[in-house]
Amino acid sequence: MGWLAGILLIGVAFSIRYAWWRRTVDYSQPRILMYHMIRPPLRRGRFNKLRVRPAEFERQLKWLADRGWRFAKLSELETLENTHKTVALTFDDGFRDNYATAHPLLAKYGAKATLFLVVDRFDRDWSTTKKAHHDSGELRAEPKLSNEEVRAMLASGVWELGAHTRTHALLTNLNATEKMHEVATAKAELEAEFDARVHSFAYPFGIFEAADKQAVADAGYSFAVTTAAGISTSLAAEALALKRIKISGKEGRLGFAIRLRTGRRGLFE
Ligand SMILES: [Zn+2]
Image (cartoon, rainbow, N blue to C red; front, side, top):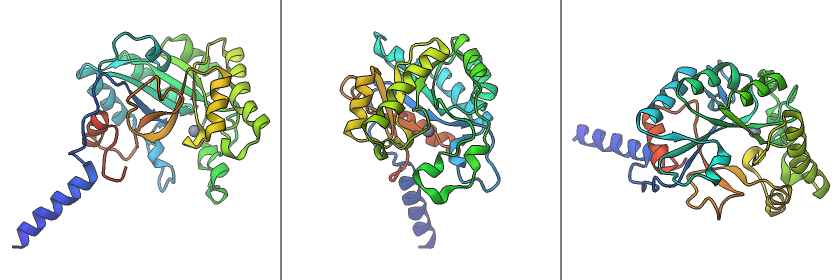
């Protein structure tokens, strides 16, 4: 009986990991993917989930292109007539590898992406904003995009710009004036610096309250994205709190395919 128990155990483990029974979300609902860095993991890195290997990222782009997915910038979701099998890639924070590594691959596959840029992103480790004991300096040490690089990305037509506050602030800690500075001033500063329209916003850490959503609406953003895992089923109703599919550096190929289908992967993710 040992082998039967073994097979059952493998079946249970597989099911918890992949939750294969979860319903397919209708393919007319666009998928919004969340990335941070496209670079190899660090030895003993605390944030390796945020680091997707370049070869893995290319496999994901090829998988999407081969299966007829169409790439869209976030703002294009507002006007697209048909969003069947549409995917919007998003990159949070503004790491230099987004230009050095992700950009050539995006161009190679005819893909597009949205960059959620922190205005004042240099020499900061925002992981400490949420938890002071996280001060490993790991994110501070990651090279960030220069304004020149961002300009080149936007000029290529591959990218559009979204805002991610001025300082990667934890919005729920701020008073109304501070919230406005991080949400509305960030938009104005990015638009002035890059001579570009900024349509969308990403909540730092995915943490926000009703007043933050209101600040985002007041500032004139069309869309705001969260870190809630999944696929929003109404772009209009959920415009200021859109779910995203998290792409982790620890994700395999089967997990990626399942997330594109259902928005999530395992039972607990
Ligand atoms: Zn962020």
